[in-house]
Image (tube, rainbow, N blue to C red; front, top):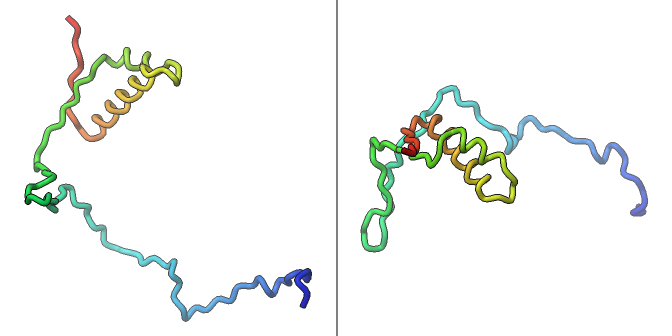
Length: 110
């Protein structure tokens, strides 16, 4: 057999064997399992102190540096300007706060 010889269609055919299990088969779960809301494991340092803490009820408050109109106008600047990225960051934080139900405090100038 010469290496220049073309392979025929029979060389590319796939032989299916239904008695063997495919590694890509995924079992169907009929029951929905809930995700844990709070992280219960404790990570400790070498000294034995807890490195993380997860309070059961924590209220997150975000204080916005400017009002919505100022953030909207700041976010529409040039892409190499840091003020543009600052405005976009705070607009994303507002959307995140609305999604998670965080408390927002806006800055007031008197």
